[in-house]
Amino acid sequence: MMTVMRAQTIVEPHRGLWPARTSAQAKACASVVLLGVGFGLWGMGGCREDVRLAGQNVRSVTVDTATHYGVTLDEAASPEQVAYVLLRAIREDFHATGKAERESALDKQFDVCAAGEIQKRNSTVYSRDTFVHNTVWRWTPTVSHYASDFDTDWDKAKARLIRKELDPKEDLGADLRECKLHLAVADPNGDPNAGAVVEIHLVKDSGYWRVLRIGFVRATRSIEVLQAPGGE
Image 1 (cartoon, one colour):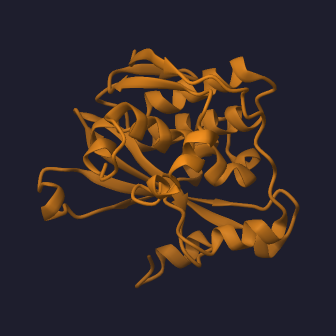
Image 2 (tube, rainbow, N blue to C red):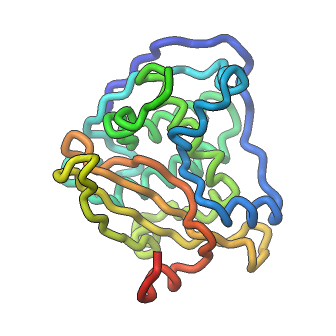
Image 3 (cartoon, rainbow, N blue to C red):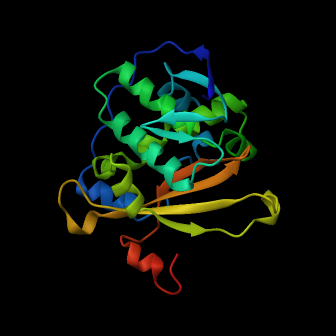
């Protein structure tokens, strides 16, 4: 299992459940690329962000084998299996009825995060543990509007995930393996124009497929568009 240490606790009441978005907010949200981490962006919030994150347990994360929802995420686990656990954990997080349930769901999200690769993108003044924590902590609110459309059945989830392999980036090392998984999701309010395509970016970290970020594909509401020639 991943090593998780409760490094520090900032005292303030727990922030509570995630609010649902309206269809209008969902449309706006899906029309831009939400990195799910905002690597260089969230650090710009300054003291306001520190207040929002008050009361959170800052974990020290080590990438290692973990088992959740009957899936063992070892070095042989596929990107789809990792994404399945992430999406179920986000769904669990969103529907949590109390802090204990929320913390349990967050632990699963930390188990699937690419902590080492996330830290490599840390251009803020925050420490490694704080930066990784703040990154993962934002995954649920980024895609929470569509959380109820995340499958809890592995076979159904696997059938919906579309993989796109990525070429190595020289600045990140030619040996870095990465891919993206796309998932078409429906608006829970039934608005046909408020659907979206969730994008999960995964990389190999310490020999394991793990999640770098989660967000949406910009201006795309259909998997078919991505699969067409010249698609994203």
